[in-house]
Length: 334
Ligand SMILES: NC(=O)C1=CN([C@@H]2O[C@H](COP(=O)(O)OP(=O)(O)OC[C@H]3O[C@@H](n4cnc5c(N)ncnc54)[C@H](O)[C@@H]3O)[C@@H](O)[C@H]2O)C=CC1
Ligand SMILES: O=C(CO)COP(=O)(O)O
Image (tube, rainbow, N blue to C red; front, top):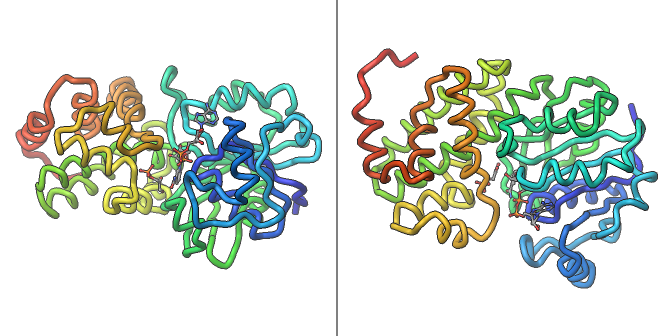
């Protein structure tokens, strides 16, 4: 097994901090890089991330930092947990310091907005073919992970040794990592469930009932499977933690920012105010547009995604979207 040295986590939001805590609880030296120097200083002074996870104290082996360049030679494992809109920018920052000793894993859930690329394609474009890549995804609210409540995720990579290494690195009595070789499936599951969560938030906000919610989750899963397999993902992946698992979590619990965002829209809040009300990243907004474009490009039918995108781009109202979905021609379920 590859031996871990210090670990460097990029992104001091709720999820980056929670994953840094998981690793620090395993007694590895962990550095949590944040973009905002004031926030990093406050985290170091208070020994917690009061902004996102106020109840999770930092152990001594977890340090918040703004300077990563001097740490890079001492680090093998880099974990990126910034929102998808900052993914390429983060790669470009670290690129001058990346060597063949490094391995990159990310826990960002999304696609690149400007290009529609999956994040492994962005990583390969920026860092080349020589470093192992992996993605961590699954049903995992940051606050529950920070509170050490039992959580299981999937780590997908094409490199078997790296998969074993990462699963061991994250393995903890309350955190379990399963391995997969399906990077495409795991990324599509993680990105598109956010769009379906917006749809269920809207439906629940409009008081459409539990039957509607279950229908959206199930038909949403069909859409994810259709797109994911068209892009080369494996059908079984979508029945696992990074597919169905995360879809159910995000669509049914109000800890989900995407679900809450949809709920606020249904209360009549406009898009900008709903995002402000959530106060954290809502990945499904960009994902709706990119997923709709990908579906068109690959001739995949994704009516829920299409109508969420229409709502978010002002092409129809919430009620028009609901009516249009219900008015679709009867057809076989599969
Ligand atoms: N919070 C959660 O429970 C989970 C989040 N995720 C994913 O993790 C990613 C990060 O989300 P959260 O930490 O929850 O977001 P957050 O909203 O809690 O925090 C976002 C953080 O990213 C920083 N940031 C924004 N733009 C940046 C950039 N260009 N470069 C570097 N840092 C930047 C912000 O300063 C902030 O600290 C998202 O893709 C999300 O879908 C995945 C699983 C669970
Ligand atoms: O991905 C998540 C849990 O697995 C978090 O979902 P939200 O971004 O909707 O809060």
